[in-house]
Image 1 (tube, rainbow, N blue to C red):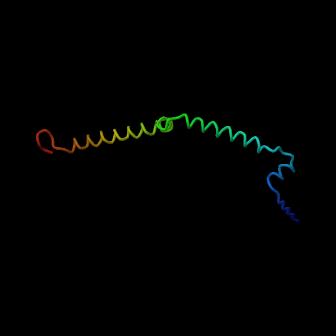
Image 2: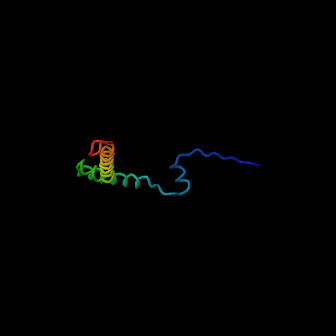
Image 3: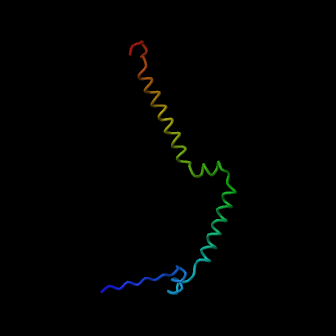
Length: 88
């Protein structure tokens, strides 16, 4: 024998039925504090400083890769060019 019971209620009604506390006001207060802090920090920061703070390694890494590729290309061009005596 199989019995199925469907209960149609909102999350608030289920919380009340099971005796759980309503934490929604606390969540809203914490989210407001978080939003205020983030807004204050973002307004205090210069966009250039933010970019340097968030992407320092990737920008430096990109520059290093660029230099490495240019050095390899220059070395390859020097090796492929004619030798000092004019012969390949």
